[in-house]
Length: 565
Ligand SMILES: O=P(O)(O)OC[C@H]1O[C@H](O)[C@H](O)[C@@H](O)[C@@H]1O
Image 1 (tube, protein in one colour):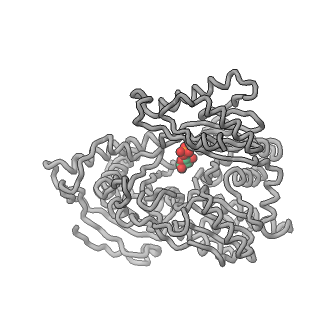
Image 2: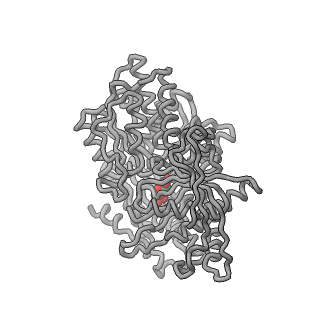
Image 3: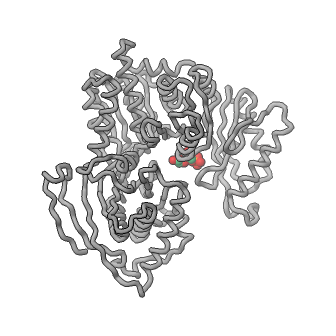
């Protein structure tokens, strides 16, 4: 690959940390011999809801590489093409920012993405290690010295999945791309890929400008300024607070040194801040028990006021108070709802479908808000909040039990770091108002949230190749299972179907509830049960077990373990 350098002086672009490179790139530099034969169906298999996910590192048995460099190049070229079309760009030059998390395949994929974008004719701005929300933010930032706003952004990440996976999330200033656009991009990518392998393809080359920018400096100063503003302009509103961060060796390590410390907080005892794509300590995932135990231990060992934990690409988070109580799942939603409802009395809180009944009464009876329990999936929840606002129903918070959350005041940006900023604002303002220091103010805010004694999620797999499917796809089969469960409870006086429900079947009974639904991505029926005792959880489990016993393609072993325990 030919390279020429076009030096950009510091006085012109003071915040660029390396000179701009102008490369000559061409996808066809890949010999067709290195390009495995793949068709549209193979490309479409890489879709995972509104993300693209695949295997990028070889060596794990049964998991062949599905995101090799040529496939990645084709996907990036397809995004560039899609963006040029969407923006009706004509001869106008567009730029796309690219960032990545700490995965070991990131450097290779970054180069492949840059080549692919270059071939589509857009300029590339590399941010290096970044968070998913920062990438979206770069499409909104108005600052030419950081080459912003970007017309589009790509985050290279597979969130909390194992080290061998990777993938892409795409953004424009309108937000994250949805399923329909991702499908369109994969279809375009399959065509581009086809041309790659086509022997008659002319080897055209294009000049692409690749620049590197320290964008995380802009993004983190935005977070710092948000806390300072909420604290009435105080430079160090967190002075004296001891807050430990656990980034799980993902991309979130910046939060300690670039956000908390400038605000005055002590961050000693923070752990796993260094990026390490083998994730040697624990899975970076606030939904993971081991991860939550790790941050809880760090808080207690260090006698800290608060613990903060992020997932790999920092679009999810959770916290732990000074006594070691977790703010995750329903408790995190309760806390954020309390904060948001203080600012916007009566507003609607949009959540995913697996939230508890206790959360509904907390939001509605204690906080005076309205709980709109929608579907699972952060994009679903955010889009629903935007839709409600457009119909005149005011809502300011869309949040999932998974730790994804977005606020209207922050452009509906799905941002785990911003969720924590809201918590920090509360800490700082409570102390300034003389309402005590430490995290007690947060603990007090969730006082009165009813929590079930038993809360579990069983994931019942559908064997896609089982003869019981009789040619149907797993979704159709799953829908039949749900219909059967629904029919079976009609005549049971102990059970009541939720009158408003947007996903699967939600049933109350035996002092608790269950929700059986289709997974967004996998051939799985997740079953959530909450009850006030083991016995009641078993009774709810039995209702499902009896209804699904004829469905031979469904793996009900987890359910059997519960009902025979
Ligand atoms: O439907 P499931 O398999 O439980 O997965 C649902 C989850 O998938 C991903 O992790 C998304 O990021 C979440 O927003 C979503 O809630």
